[in-house]
Amino acid sequence: RRRSSPRRTRGRFDSWTARPKTSRRRGCGCRPRRAGSCPASPRRSSTDVRALALQSSGPEASRGYLLVHTNGGLNQMRAGISDMVAVARILKATLIIPELDKKSFWLDKSNFSDVFDEEHFIRYLANDVKVEKNLPKELVKAPKSVRYFKSWSGVDYYQNEISPLWEHRQVIRAAKSDSRLANNFLPPDIQKLRCRTFFQALRFAPPIEALGNLLVERMKSFGPYIALHLRYEKDMLAFSGCTYGLSDTESEELAMIRGNTTYWKVKDIDPLEQRSHGHCPLTPKEVGMFLSALGYPSSTPVYIAAGEIYGGESHMVDLQSRFPILMNKV
Image (cartoon, rainbow, N blue to C red; front, side, top):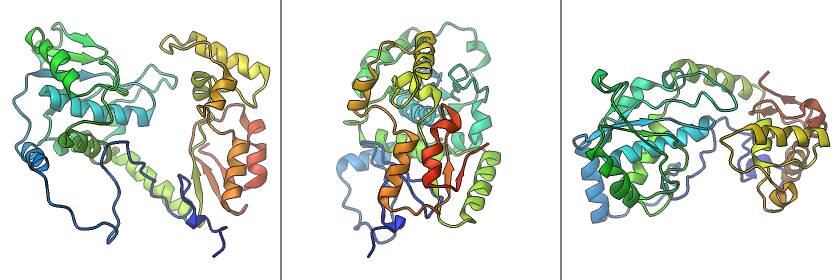
């Protein structure tokens, strides 16, 4: 068979279906399954049996309330919320509906219920973690233990260093949510809980779900397509220090943004070193070369699933010359 068929291509670019490619989170244990593609489930170990018993027994008696301030973009916040649900389980805490990031680059003022199906989130997790919409009135003004949980922490950290805080406070506030839980070496029930939260509990709010389905149907009506998430946005380039292919003026603007963003700790970045280590996104020109090399025909519609591309049309010329049917969200 000819290798030019995009359907045979492996990777994140899927031109034949609007269903997202769900990348398996490292150590998470969640993988999409196809009928007949997996052998019969192996016999459960004693560890798995205990995990199932723990899940079916419902959440343990709550020791206090966990407030969560998420940070980052939408996918980063989803991952952080999934981790914090698992942390609430470890700490035997009642989780208050997380507060979405409203201060980052996008300045999005959406609340949890604007983006996610809040009632479904609470119901779905009822047997794992108790979730409430707000703190009890008597605790709203009560002293809180505010902590920046240590990144990539395991169960021992939360049980030995965070759980003792319940002896002094009824409310613990997690000031950040990203990467606060280790990817590996966690109990199976905790891994499964964070996976189920990410893929099942965090369902989009009905209006967003409906609009998304409408857009997908419209895109599919044109036949096979590519939904391309170009990570070539101003905030991404400023944060990473990647300036390959940019003008001196653009590079200086990004350096100024990075210097003025107080919560970005690394200010001096060598762009050549970043790129040589593979820490930079492909430029739109390089993405076009890559897709052509994979065998996608130039007649393939390409939908840009990203924010505003830095530099505008000047940086999209080469990609559009290879794939003329190029559409964005504007």
